[in-house]
Image (cartoon, rainbow, N blue to C red; front, top):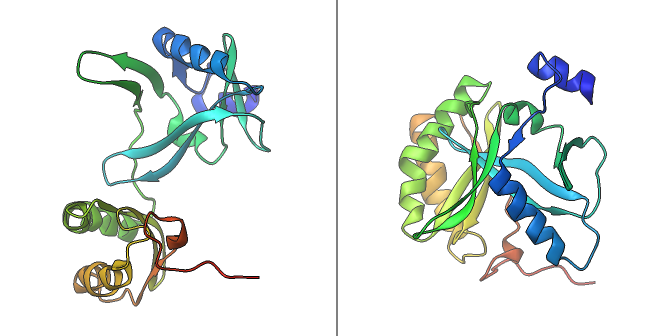
Length: 204
């Protein structure tokens, strides 16, 4: 791990930092668990044109490839794929009169290496997501390959009976208007897991 961190950061300093307030909160939560907890797992689940989307949760086991950061009374587990985009990040816990929760300050820019993917991401953020947000939905760009893009439909779009129409006549139409070379917009969403699933799970 030290060699990896040295290569990644130029030093043997930790990949990311957890503030004292966040450490206290995480430790307190771990103490309430009835099962043995290995530590806090952090990963990047998605991105917009301007920000990463994170997943934070307690982990009961270490997975292959995890980068383990000792943090006082617990460990922070970072999956290897997310690690480069978490270099230098700070996990804090903020509590005030209006709200409370974990906050992640990340100096890394969530840009795509593929220029076309970045342009499509900006279109999704500026035009498509504001439109589907009116119905509680959110579209996440997963990948761009030649004439195809892969998306995930979250929020109110997952399991919605109109998701297919939204994809064909809304999302796909907007993308192909700007990027006519994109022939396929592929929805990877498990709609059977949504609040109102219209895809019935297979039997047998």
